[in-house]
Length: 328
Image (cartoon, rainbow, N blue to C red; front, side, top):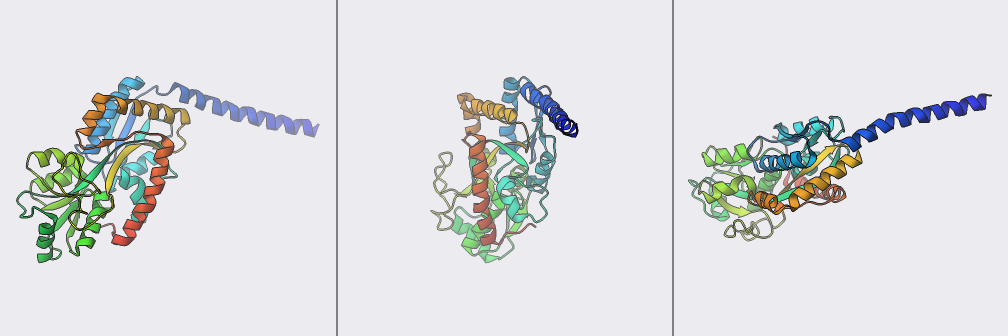
């Protein structure tokens, strides 16, 4: 009799668990049934923000639900990442992070409240853009060597801005100073857009920023690009030499952006988002809009994105150690 009772209880437990799982599966299949938020971890106006809004507009059409972009700047994007990491894994709150948040943060922040690998489900990488060393046109430097000479003349007095402590632009700037054997004052901003605005207005003379936010201003003569941080020149700025050609860094330093969801988001939701975004990126008109911002359009699978995060985390950890970069 006890055996029968015991089996019965296990059976009832299994039925109860199944009852809990079935509604979740049904909800995943029905997704989306309400508006979706895409959290952009930076201030409005930058390249990441603009691409996120292009995708949100297209996803609204493809998914049949409104997709809204919400900007949550702060701590180089880590505040937004922590918020999304703790959100319900139901596909209604997504994060549009960059390289810094997903691969650099674990090596440079000692009090990080999220783990990029553990707490997020990668969906797809959307685009990649190189970084540039920029100066205000009033700065009497037209080459990297001339900028190095200016900085060397007054060690620590000349400012070099970045898009935030712990960002790709911050680490690239630290490696640049290390290679050039100069001291410059690091001035971190809450994203590339405010940094670029202050370089244009000559509040800071120089900075490291991605090509997407600076390209129109370079073409308009409001910024001067001295070097690009990739191994080859950009087709957007063919006259701008690489740091390698300038006798300094030869490693790649680029910024990618993509879409992730909280961990445990149902696989059908991840797969549907991945397919929808890849379809959008395959649209020539949309890809051209993104390319005009200076991005190389990517796409791909969640598995490919996950592997890229793991590989680049190792890469940037080495850079953090070599450069001695710290959070300021």
